[in-house]
Amino acid sequence: MAKRTRAAQEQAMHECYVSRNHWWKWTTVDEERDYYIQHMECLRCGGHRRWRVSKTTGDPMGNNYNMPDGYYHQFEDGENPQQVRKELRLFEVEQHVQQTKPSNLRRVK
Ligand SMILES: [Zn+2]
Image: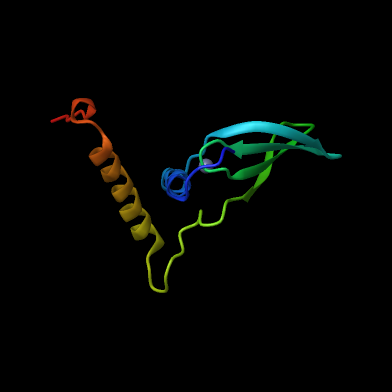
């Protein structure tokens, strides 16, 4: 992944985390006896995913993730993760509202 500023990297990780979605680029494949391991790299946040796929049936057999430092939100004691996620989601979308040029912001009544 190309070098970028810390703020840009934090924004990228936040967008992936809040949306629960990554921009996966499929990279290399490892072949084990019973399954393949498809490696993927997120083009946005730089996270790495190892996806196991059965060689005989094509069934997905699970994932392992290796995410960049700071990717996961650190919940504090007593915080409700679902509520925090709602707040993070709303904050993120509202940031985009503020950054969007008025001429590109569509208001639907
Ligand atoms: Zn990502």
